[in-house]
Length: 486
Image 1 (spheres, rainbow, N blue to C red):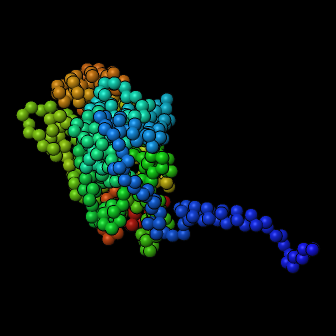
Image 2: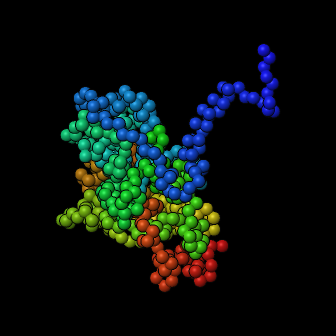
Image 3: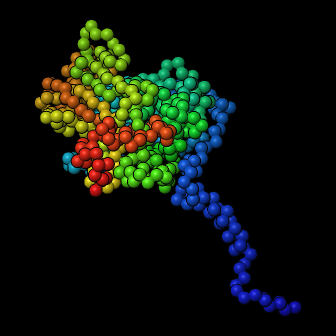
């Protein structure tokens, strides 16, 4: 029997092609939906990452663990690539990629592993304590650390319930920790894990940042609109993470930062306007943080001044907030206005070990890049930390003493012995003569975002009681009187 001819024009597709098309649609539609560029909403919640479902390890982890390395070996039995991925991050290396900088002939790297700051001065000078915040084990003092040993990766630092786990000297588990209980408690990182180091960095609660401290463990909405109240966001909701690479880079540990590696408000607040033309005209020149983080250290004070020259005094009473014999004099402040600078996301300068100091004034440990003429820069809030720290008066560069350990400054209270011990480790000769010089270091302010009703108002920045130093920002005066940035 002959087939009846088709009564419609056009090509008849084989049945299998329709099935293939259906499968492709099932795959592509969800993928396109979850791509930020494809989302048709300005609801910030729509851009938050989907957090992994927690797998209870209490019945999975077996055995007795005598060392942290024993725990890591057990983790790697299932998570075979995890240590290698961690070892590719700056949480492990504590050092940036190489940069070309105008004042050096060779490429340089920047990080806690090889540079200095103006609070604790150097992690290399106090490996005994500083390494309690490194995600590795076995960092023995006076020895070069081997970054290639996978079993030295500390999985528990980021994944254990911190009520079960504490790190001790040289990055090892603290004495008395029940490693089996800690290993069985593992889960996705929480604010407890991140905060253990980032809230208490630099020697204590709130020392470094001004917008990160222990008040953020259990904040209310008035302290931080993201982490407090009903939002109750995790650090990883903004610091997106893939293969253990965590989005976000510290200005203090870099020279330039790839915007693709940085956290920004625009990740979630996509194309959002304020519904007020006067406010929206500010968006090109004023960062979100400037209006929405009106004050630093809202509850717990932060250190704003550190004078090392006053250390080692006899007969003076120690007080955490004003004076310690091992560290010198301090000033702490709370609930104060930030310092405002033009900022394009990079450093104009970052002091490198061996750079000359400025004998005629302040030496900048870092100097945020940007100016009124830089169309990529915006007015941004910073915490400014000022210090008096030691330098070599003959070689004219900053010095980093060995503080902890045998014959360190905290044992002998002799600056000369601390500098002499540091010569080999820091790679800088010490002339035998030292003094103290003033340094500035800037910390970008991005946490403790306030509810909208607490944002800065017009008269916060304009008028007789302005918090802005308009002339320092490059304006001839208050721009409301003559117009904005040209």
